[in-house]
Image (cartoon, rainbow, N blue to C red; front, side, top):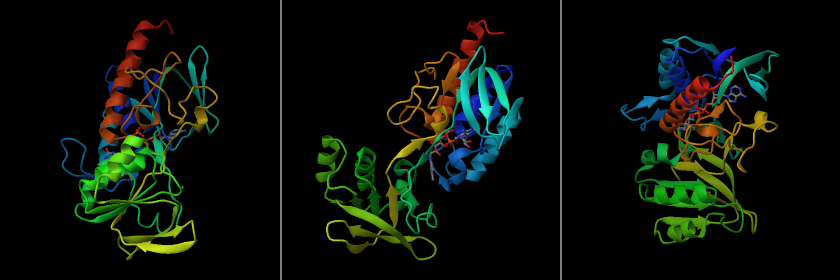
Amino acid sequence: PYDVLIVGGGPAGAAAAIYAARKGIRTGLVAERFGGQVMDTVGIENFISVNYTEGPKLVASLEQHVKEYDVEVMDNQRASKLRREKLIEIDLENGATLKSKSVILATGARWREMNVPGEQEYRGKGVAYCPHCDGPLFKGKRVAVIGGGNSGIEAAIDLAGIVEHVTVLEFGDTLRADAVLQKKAASMANITIIKMAQTTQVRGDGKKVIGLTYKDRNDNQTYDLDVAGIFVQIGLVPNTDWLKDTLELSRFGEIEVNSHGETHIPGVFAAGDVTNVPYKQIIIAMGNGSAAALGAFDYLIRSSVE
Ligand code: FAD
């Protein structure tokens, strides 16, 4: 069996693998797609100590760093079940079962998409999901935020300090954000909130976003809004469907962990966007992944599983 088996090959999983392998323990990493969300990222400007990099480039260095160590990497493999027997067992969709003394779950998350024409085409060309990452790219421009929940209104307040103007489009007839956020947003002169607005299309010039079209759900009229950026803030979905039967998840579907990355099952740790740790960022996922590996190592030296 493995000493540590990591499920997920994004920043959290890669960091966990390096930290575990450096302890000289048998380390495996199974991932559906090595690199995770970073593979879908164009420019990265907040990976501290690196002024600018691009997703695939960062993934290539991650892979190279992992390869420096004795880590058994199983790429293109999807985990489908976790069981706590004497050892922890992970079933793969290909029929195999992997056994390990400890496991680190780092299966990440995905942004919920609008599923409207133009969204995929202009992803990274004006369609964005992360205000902390991409906000500064729209300095002095007009942008839209889709979604009036906490993340949407937080994004609007955050962006309003950088961009010229923010329009929030909320599908329902009320905002779902906390009152204090709504009040703050209402006090900012360059935020406009439109309710009962259903975004129906992302418009572009072939190279980048030039605006969007929305339907006013009161009278079914459609309107064009000219913006350079569209921040989609309608939810982040943790990749935990396969864990529902075995792990208690938060109401958002996240794995709850403590500061050592431990879940409620002994020997099962978790790190990165899949957990309830706030602020989903590369550097945070790497930090959590490293901590979970050290947590797992601590667990192993104290446990009696041979
Ligand atoms: P992920 O990167 O989501 O990796 C999850 C891993 O688990 C993948 O390898 C996946 O294939 C694997 N996996 C999932 N399910 C299974 C399964 N059942 N079996 C096996 N493997 C599985 N953050 C920044 O700090 N700066 C940025 O500029 C930035 N820009 C972003 C731009 C975009 C478009 C997106 C989508 C995100 C961006 N982020 C950015 C956020 C950042 O990418 C994430 O916070 C980070 O990747 C989380 O790392 P993770 O390892 O927890 O999860």
